[in-house]
Image 1 (cartoon, rainbow, N blue to C red):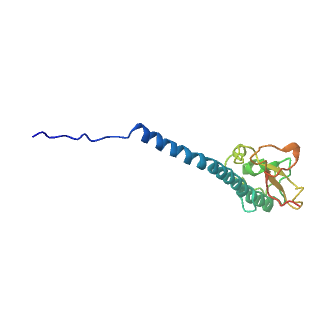
Image 2: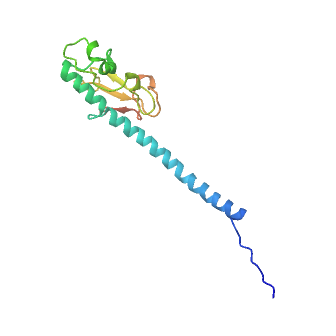
Amino acid sequence: MQRRTRRRRHGFTLIELLLVAGILAVLAAFAIPSLMGTAQKVNIDLARAGIGRNGPIAKGLKSYKWDIGRYPDSDEGLQALFVPKGQADSDNYNGPYMEGAYEELLDPWGNPYEFRSPGDMNEDGFDLWSWGPDRSNNDGKASSDDVKNWLEK
């Protein structure tokens, strides 16, 4: 009596592997573009949170105004929020009003935030904005992708 031994198959065939790779490629073709759009939206939301009314930059500027009686002017810029207490010109200065270094204060695209005080758009306050995803100042004119602390008039 002869026993027939069946060979067990271990692993996958080349066709099975190619089929799975093809399915994964199709799924990735649909998923990657939607994830890229999500990343851009997250960066815009981060920039809005940073410069918004309750964002860390706005809070630092409000604390500065509370102590000094005014916002830093455009020449002083956001650097005024980082000056150590002993180096400030005013006795009322209780800063620094933000942690870290001014050079670290960048928008999600790696550019410095823009600041103007007194503001052109917020006349009683300050204008604070990021050039947004295109990283371009568009010859000094705002564009639709800019992230700003004011509403368009």
